[in-house]
Amino acid sequence: MEDEELAKSLLVTQQPGNIRISNGFGSNDTGASASGVTTVLLLSAFVTACSAFAGGFVAGYSAPAESGIIDDLGLSVAEYSVFGSIMTIGGMIGAVISGKLADIIGRKNTMWILDIFYIMGWLAIYFAKGAWLLDLGRLSLGFGFGLTCYVVPTYLSEITPKNLRGGITSVCMAMMPLSVSVAYLIGSVINWRALALIGAIPCLLLLFGLFFIPESPRWLAKIGREKEFEAALQRLRGKNVNISDEAADIKDYTENIQKIPEDKILDLFQQKYAHLLIVGIGLMVLQQFGGLNGYAYYMNEIFELAGVPSITGFIVVSIPQIPAITLGSILIEKFGRRTLLMVTVTGECLGCFLTGLSFVLQVFEAFYSLGVGSIPWIIISEIFPITKKGSAGSICNAVNWFCNWLVSFTFNFLVEWSPAGTFFIYGSMSFLGVLFIAKLVPETKGRTLEEIQASLTHILQ
Figure 1 (cartoon, one colour):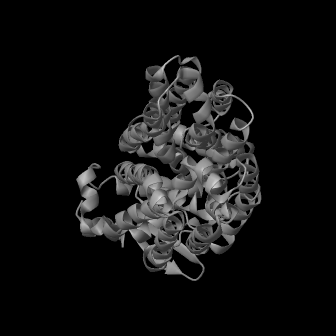
Figure 2 (spheres, rainbow, N blue to C red):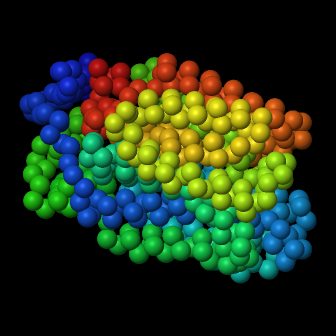
């Protein structure tokens, strides 16, 4: 079908307080697709939150385990540096294939695979007697984490109703920074092998929970499994809920969007997708260049520079995160993704500048948990059409992991140059991020995925 014909079949029209998608089979009012919380929806959110928590624990493991591993296994500083950094290599590999893998085998099956890599990684570290098995385990954990960063927000955005999507997804994704702090706290009182076993606990919960949650209805609709699509959507919305309007909107949109040629990664560089890709990549760069991984991987050293005992610092950093996560899940649907992201990036900027002046770390971590840690992933999972989501997600995820590596690699060099200057640089990047969000990032609150994607993609305007 020509672009003009497709545009007519998915015409988006604005009405006061509502958006309607007109398709070739009539006009459906998707404002009715807002729904309530069900047991299956909560269980699905909990299971995916376990995956996000497991990923954050991976990131937080190396700092508290460092001295114990070096002493017990006799590793040199260089060998431990390989152990610490090899996770990002695994993460980049996982990121590159994450979108295509989730498109081919499904969101749920991708979670099965990442969980297997998590469990194998933790077992390898626990039984390690030398550097090679230690590194292999860390590589496996990184690969699982790379898959997690794409599939968790994508799955959550596709199963949640529009009025709950932001809050549920933000809480689940905020498990990543929260679990980093949990790893610090627990790792400060137990040895590194026991910490590896604790890291496997959320992986086992994920393994068990995957038996009881449905596949993404939108993915099922995309591959033409109509009966399973309707059954999954009914389970998520409740057995007594009328899903006919929402199901019809999803099917009509999916059928029409699939008339676009098959997903190819080079298609994303066409002019009609340029704005979406700039937003996605820009948010990933912003999230990482705010300096989180500098804090996360080298927090012991930062506390030493500030003259603060590690255990005290870990507690002080962790305390603000619980109320910040709770507050973020409430505010995201009230004020929207864009507004909350601008506020939290501004707070992150302030936290970096204050850290540069006085190393008051709790300011930065609270704002990161409030919005910066989760909202970029939420927006990326919402803005791309389902036929382009795999390729776009892989690109954005890979950029995120590359920036992750770049920040963690350069952090020590920057701190040696100037501890205060390091955080002033991060603060400046956050300030530029505020301008980027204000200029380019769209608001997606209160709309279905079909409405968002039809209104943003130039081909559908």
